Length: 256
Image: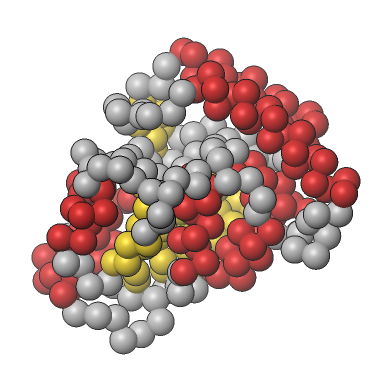
């Protein structure tokens, strides 16, 4: 990592169009947002291309926004929401604001280390793909500290998705996805689900609209401090599956 490149990125505004925009949704992340932002800024700045960081706050009630603003990073934008709208809503706002040729959505807990970003970017730049999915289930992925319950849950949801939605992606919910600008705008403009299941809708739409998708094995660590109630999210996930199917039958996605 070049400290000079990092210092330049955080103090001198970009004059070129960003090659990459990184979007992080955040809700009450005062404990871990600064370490995550710091890790991303130090690594990506060393890669030698113009980029921007967008943190889409989701109505945090703690010091998340204050801490981000105090960093003074000139190439980071903090999008502030008056109220909590859901993770999918935050990602949609962030992607709408992105200016890069490629757009990465990454979780605030940095469970997939930012060092994995080059794997996805290379597939989009040279492989002709529109969407690159960081995957904990693809051959070659490295997963640490994932509980037995989460393994069981992932396998069950994957079976439902595969059988009823014909989505070939093994891991729809990993919070590390990259798009071309065109794909990002089209998919998230058509997005209707604002909770945690938005990933599934996006991948369903990517297949429907004919975008070329690749699933890329990544390293993933189950970071402590998750605020997700897994059992409640499973119920919402199943409900949202029905909503996606209903939307499609009603023609909601036809003009996306």
